[in-house]
Length: 271
Image 1 (cartoon, helix red, strand yellow):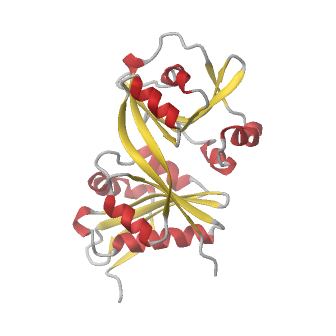
Image 2 (tube, helix red, strand yellow; image 1 turned 90 degrees about the vertical axis):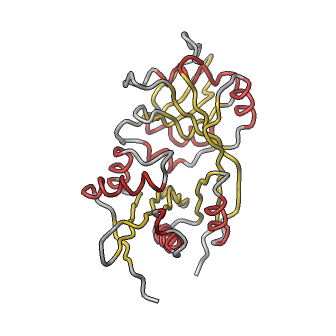
């Protein structure tokens, strides 16, 4: 059956129309303009919109990133008025097609734990739950005045060793370099490298946030605060995978969970 919409790449001229749609799809966390533009400029990223053939309305979109052999389905969203029409399935299939064409051997994505409809869609296409992730909102009043550790920017030549130390995909770390308002940081305490974070001061927040000693969480986060220049912010967000001790520590300190996520993964079907 012929579709009554078509897919095309997004462009910078689409921002205003895209933003209206995105706020309806993801009201709690729409893309910022800086993230939208950086996604269009990246060599290993792609953002595609579904457009109604007749009235040219935006119906949905997907956003992907390529990290070596690993493909990230960053977002798949459908306008609330056009859900349950198969658009989400089409967008997901097309996103995986692009990632496979880019040489990816596996796909992964994040989804809110309470988003049953999305989880069921991803399971339908073979994604399986790999691990759990969290995002915490840390208010400034919870931070320490004089951190004991320090942060410094990661050098390009350190990427391989940093990826091994913190079990991260080195290709993913490479994608963080050269982006506007992005800091690629390693946290050091008493001569040891104990944490890593990609930090966006205009968000403000860090993902991934990796820490080997959970008791130093507020020390690390307090240093991240120093990278924020907008005085209007009163808190920052940290998002991380599968660190149960860190979850327990932050909850004990009275830090609120913003949302809980599931990380899902699927191997690429060959042939």
